[in-house]
Length: 345
Image (cartoon, rainbow, N blue to C red; front, top):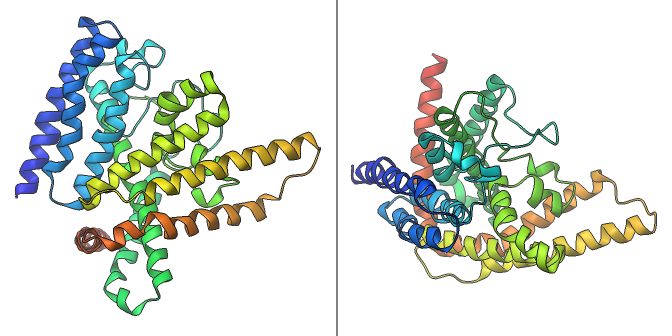
């Protein structure tokens, strides 16, 4: 009951009130330092709001929405940039649209889709895929009581798939909520593309995995750094900021001090991505044929999974949050399976 009250207070009272204040700044303050100063109280509020929740999932999701994406969007908004201000669009947004874009991991698509995987897709197919992923996650969670009997690598594999499915489902659900708040027909940027089809680390991080974070980092970090110091500095700065923010997210998740492991994961991937891009240029200059995608894709995913097991997951496994995450996931999975059973009959 306390969690429900906290949810109502945060999502239905505090956030709408704070964003109404931010929206009013459009007509009160010009972009720049004064708008930034006026937004700082909301930035602090967004950093504190996730601590209102005791459940790990709600606290971490709220931290991702508000303390990472929300704060970055507001900082960009202070200087008339980012998803709230693309092409001056903030002046044309209604208040509900402003709420949706500021508080949810969504962005309005300003340009035509650059590839077939961009865009909304067939609603029925999207719903079926969502249900299938929900059932797959419920099945994985149903295996958790048997964890003591599994090899450690099997447990790590289950956790890795759990992270992917959970993030994908949360982003998909948030997009559905966002579409309900936005004008009919509004096109949204893609949030995910199948990561297991990645042709390179550059493709994985820039074109497939958690594209809302990629978009925010591109606007807030990569673009400005690249313009001043070049593409390599832009890539490394993006991975460094991503690593720092993941350390912050892990603090919300575990409520324990950062260890630096998650940050190291992203710094390592930054170096490897830069090296990969340099290798591609080297092959191109010499007229060499790059490795076949059938070879590159499994190597890319294998590297991501191996480094995830090495640097990304251990902090969670050492904390008390692991058992709480499992219990919460089992409770949600049981509700999902019960609803699916009732729908079938």
